[in-house]
Image (cartoon, rainbow, N blue to C red; front, side, top):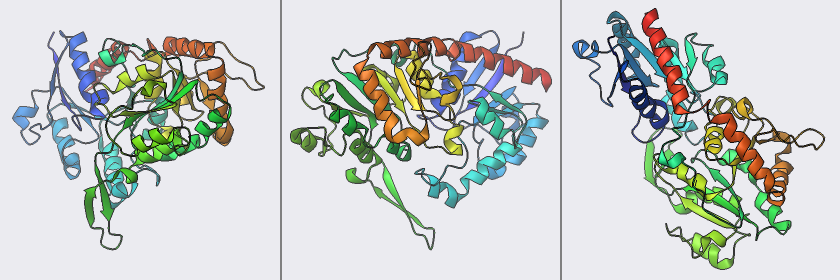
Length: 409
């Protein structure tokens, strides 16, 4: 049987393409070496038809070269009998609270991505929720969820021992509005007399990067290095430390020096800052905590995000407290029942947005006081995700889809 030759064109070398492009296609060839040959190329020869026609499928994330050339390029690929697949993992137009909002609006990137969706011959995405949204513009949409390779070192659970219950947020720099749901939580836990039993952990702390200054009149953009007190991570940290009220004056002084160093005996402090790690090792941070927090603001951008936090927490056997919205409603079964009951088959705790002001703290305190529930939730979540979101399972789905698209062309 002739192998299906696939060209994978990632959108970046270190970010989203790890989950959506490079890792899945490497695994496809690894699992089905007699059926697929994969080339990963960041700068493909898109103007060379002789070079392109060696491929049966071209998979690209968001765009394949310049946006303005996409319509003509996709027609050429059709004429060469090449199946093209666009992948999209995020909604094309983030709301005003997203740090990239002004940049995207000023450049018209949201309109360019939407046009690419309309032009695409096939689209893959992360969830059925996002399929429903994309289908308004393109009917050929398929779910290939984010998945975990359970043999990859960063996803092998090896928790660091601790006498404290560790509560964490592990995420990127675009979640300030989401994390506002947690304001006051650290203070309420402290008021319960639990500071010696808990540790709040903030993973991904990062002061690199620049600040973009946009002239509202001319649209001119200028950049300068970001200062520590301008960083979103500084704002995150104030939330996780109750504006540094839960740490000692000495520890506060150390933290505000913003040095990438560990504080002495940091494992026995009520707060821990964990600096950013590369995409290839970041998930090892799950070994530093017991409860993962996933608050999100209710908007269309967040509604169609992937449930990656559910998947990662499940494979690492962590308890998850998440917003009762969007991606977290796909797989999570709320252990807390209306009226105060507890469902032992539940695999997470879901927080209604209108109860943000009280329920995040309420359920963190409950789990700290009843740690056996952490184990119950963790094990149930692992059972939920271990098969459905294993990279082997999703790779099998990808294999079947690619065969179908080849057969239908």
